[in-house]
Image (cartoon, rainbow, N blue to C red; front, side, top):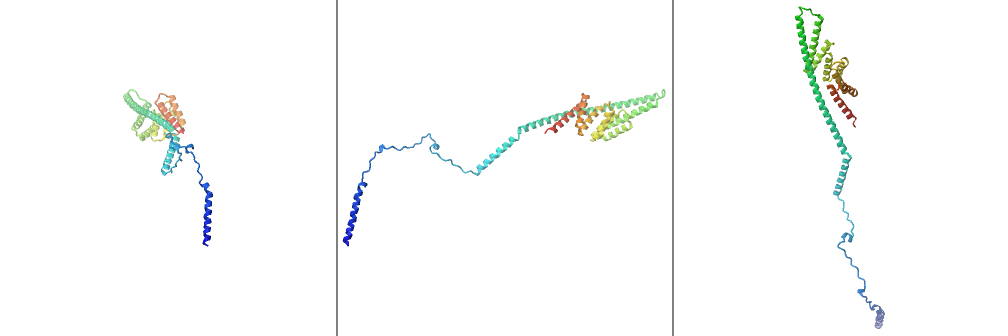
Length: 305
């Protein structure tokens, strides 16, 4: 048995040696020899100093995260742009031009008002001078009547006086005295008493020498009392019944002013224009011109959009 095992072992070793001998020529063959210098050298990549890192090595853009601060700034910029657009849309140059035009109009109105005030002051001074002159005339008339009465008394023994002449002189004297008393009250600005005095004068002397003047002064008193209706009635009486009176021009001016205040603008303009044409050099014509300018300004202001 041991002999058989020995033979088997010998046979295995022989087989292994035979296999080794067959594979030896392949394994131990000479490796080919190559010249390293004849082979192409690998190209070395160099970066020029003029080349930027971006061109040499492309990199992808880095997106930073949006913060709350960035959103706030963007929102503020958008609001500022919107406000700027709103200012531009407001058309500020045109508004400034309109304001300048209105300022010029106001200045013009102030100039007209100053001139109007000056003319009114002149008219008031003329009014009181006229009153003083009339009072002086009445005083002189009273003095003359008194002298005439004394002369008549002195000559009564020589020449009989007529009863009608004496009555006429007395009526004229009373006429003048009553009118003078009313004027005195008006000069003192006692309008209620002056009104009653002028009314008494008209009742007592319907054909007196100062009837037209009494109606005119009654109209002025009614204007002071803001009673345009009765004032217009008195001025119309002067205009229609006493066309040759020295007060007729002033009465026409007052009627035009009342018409304007009552909204009768067209009629007032016609009356004021008539005064200017008929009496261009008078104080009433100057006042009429001022009133016309004021009415024109009112019309232009109401028609301006």
